[in-house]
Image (cartoon, rainbow, N blue to C red; front, side, top):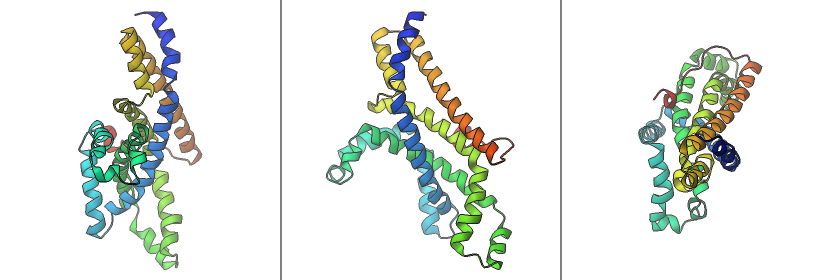
Length: 235
């Protein structure tokens, strides 16, 4: 173990910080936007909504994220219709493919969490809203969603950490984020221990920052108690 390698690895690994944050934040936000309609579809009375959402979450949660990355980046480009479509400028870029794959994966897990939270809302609240003459839209936006997301805030904090860790797989499709630059530097120095310890410390620091941010949000909204693990975290 060489202290000199540790010192040299710090600026190298930091070169991937920006891409790691871009992938993490963009994938997380997109995943959360997709998780809500998917969660609603999982709880819908109509099988035309419920079954496609159930199949989607089953397929995504049942297959490795790395395989999904390869399918989106390498596989879709083999289809002529995709290469000739308006989506090709996006799907030919590894960064966009990484964000899309991680977001779709995160959405599948969070959809199940959202569906569970929706199921736990007492039915009496909807009945009370109907008796008060509150419209369907306002019942959803003013009564249901605030309760659901207040309950889900600890789970959302867990999910952004899982997305951060998933972003390390983006190096498999040539994206030079933290893990990507660490692997490239390891190939030059033949010192994987020092380089990946440095990368791991940086991931821990980012995770600590996200955890601190969400803990502050939980305190602000008066959320206490233990965190319920997401299906992805407990898998």
